Length: 412
Ligand code: HEM
Image 1: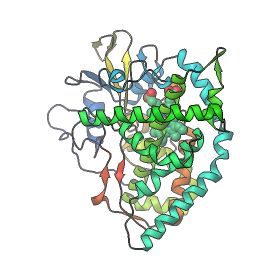
Image 2 (image 1 turned 135 degrees about the vertical axis):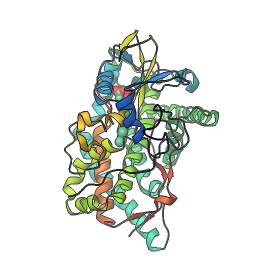
Image 3 (image 1 turned 90 degrees about the horizontal axis):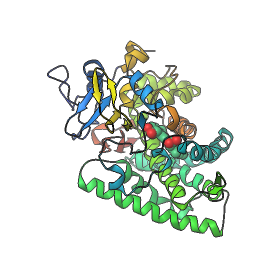
Image 4 (image 1 turned 180 degrees about the vertical axis):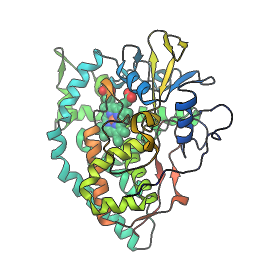
């Protein structure tokens, strides 16, 4: 089977001329950031973003090591390079923004809700939901429309699954997506930050009500279970519970949506690889990790240095923000060989950085992979020759995530 390389337009920096410039806030930065990542890895593996006052690591080994070295690379001061991120969003630290050992106890508790058995038990429910959605897409295509596959398919799937996990009643579900989008589309622009602040407030307000309802009327959901759980003989505070909901909604919704949308675009661009998966549906599960490697939905997140550190002959001060470019690490030829820049759905991906590594390894990875597998299985079964109008596609405007808001879809 042949593979084709990704040859999208370069919109960040002309490659090969002048010093490499990385600016995730530049308009259009996410259209194709990979040529810049390549130059960072080769020419500036420790890059300083002077204006934003942060540093960037882009090679697999560096990023991998940093995510595991939580003593030096702390999560406790936020996950972006935006200064005062915690103050701006009005956030108290949630467990994703804690270091071990504090992080460990909370994580252990929450992991109980994510046993492979519990996740596998959701498969029939997820498949039924996805089939219903695919039916609706088919009906709209048959009526001559070109539905937006993001709003009709890839985005409702994680929204549904998260709501099921948390025990959110069906009538409240449509409220999730806008909050999640606003929280994850971080940019330095005031309007975007304002939306994120409002979304955090909306989400917290909603879950305070839901927790109260669950106190009076507990259900068979994770929120009810967590309400009565104890760490070191103590109940979790409402603040911990809210933080937990926040991380789930913000961390699980758009990421999964982007994973699926990016995969659909790549398969449309690589018809021979799509034909391979249509003919070998049992390979879709393993291919999900190749899609994740190839287009990390979360392109990078930051850590804060707890002490000065020598890196590539330079001394970074204590409290320096270091941005870890997961998406660049995922395409490092030192890790994946010469064909790292090529999509290959038959590749055996042993590990990648899209779920990070170390203590914060994505707790939802198992269910995310399952959503990826079922979402693609059902779509490819139903629409083996689907087409996307990439000219009409609208990308998510974000410095941290890569995905789409709109992808016009035709049954083919
Ligand atoms: C393809 C989909 C997903 C991607 C790419 C993704 C990515 C990530 C990444 C990169 C982190 C680590 C953040 C860091 O660097 O500190 C993370 C953590 C986390 N993710 Fe996911 N995620 C996905 C789906 C989900 C889902 C579906 C859920 C919930 C059901 C979820 C819940 C979490 C939680 C709770 C954490 C925090 C873990 C901790 O701090 O110990 N994620 N995820």
